[in-house]
Length: 256
Ligand SMILES: O=C(O)c1cc(C(=O)O)c2c(n1)C(=O)C(=O)c1cc(C(=O)O)[nH]c1-2
Image 1 (tube, rainbow, N blue to C red):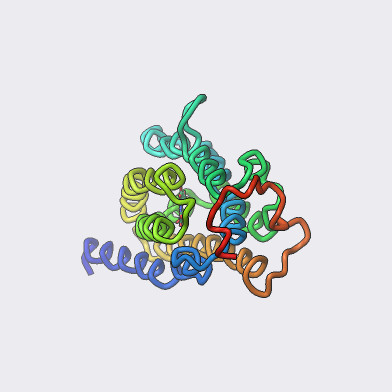
Image 2: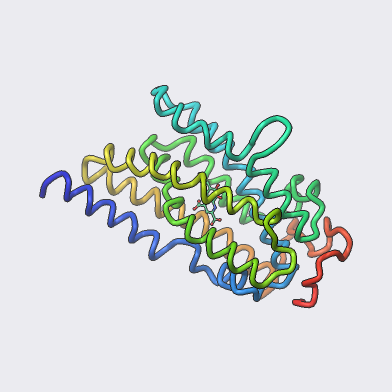
């Protein structure tokens, strides 16, 4: 086997992991993108997903703190800027809070992370620890779920626009912006992995890291489904469906 075909086969193996395990197939996403989630379920998703958003730049800062190669740090640091933005404006976190407002939530409540499900915290914190502790190759590989993110972001924009009154360009700005940002991040990460995973052992470790990350994403949706869809058992500390809801400005309440 030539090195080139080996790389190609490995690339195929990574894509196959996404096909089988990415969270676009999770029943919660199917409900959300198909307009079948109630506003309470949409809000629960916004509240919990905020926790993921809030930890992404911390995860990337942990990554940078371990990087000895300045070229790699230069390529990676834009991820933090993408999410945190400037001092006064911009950034994914603030765009996510605009979505929170649009669905009728107090952004200060969402940013407090009160009401985030325990399992969401465990899954997201496990991702941050993974990136902080594992070999760099595995840390990079764990970000490669972003190979599959542009498709889910496009589906989400189309689905939410079609089915929910709150959805407009301002509310969905987060996802549109990710469509610009993610491809360059993932191009770098993928090239790095294809170059550096040059033994079977390293390829196996990178594939396992990608599987771990799909588990991180899937688990968050399992937690949401269990708490807010079926059986609808909200664990202690989980959002009660009322706190942080501001007014009744969202006309899609009819969905409930
Ligand atoms: O909406 C999604 O389904 C989704 C998934 C993922 C992902 O695959 O990890 C990310 C994002 N969005 C995202 O917006 C984002 O900024 C992001 C950063 C990362 C990462 O691992 O560094 N994943 C993701």
